[in-house]
Length: 227
Image (tube, rainbow, N blue to C red; front, side, top):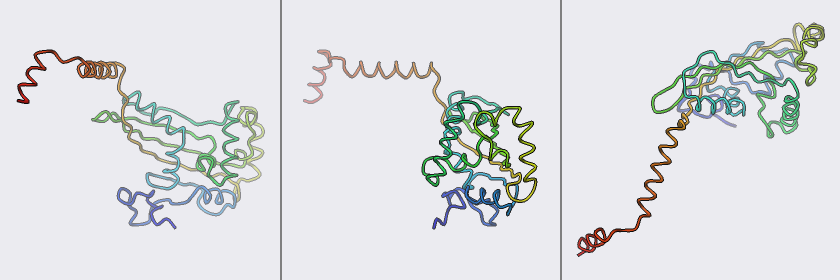
């Protein structure tokens, strides 16, 4: 039993004295949607298990790297994650592998969410760091659960098939649920090209100085110093 899971395994940084954090797991959220028992809306914040797990997703990691490279202030930027198109097929395969291995082969939060909407803000901090604030939202319905690759993401499917399928579960089991997750990350800013060149030149200069042969005056002064 993990006694610190409710604070994201970080009891020094995250505290929950009043038990207000949302500590459900991806399996619990999936059961709530499937059974119709439980809240239909979840708001996850920093330290909640689902938020901490989402941070490990490759999509979030890529956004973190991009923000570090740009190193600028930005508000309301989009970086949505989608399973649409041909590029979505490997993601489908990954999701099924994650379920088959009980989360050992991938990210369970992403498997449950599927496609999700992502907006983010970046604030440049001192010490060449960037504060990244991410807001993720997702709606789960019967139609989204049964959506086939490629065809299920076309406008025709969503306009003609989606409403019919969702009408079969307008309430109760497999009805609409919504998840919202707020993520904060601090990324070390990547040095600009000019900075990298200056550092490289300095390193080369130091290396050349260290490898340069000693002059006669230096050698003689060294002998005098040693006595």
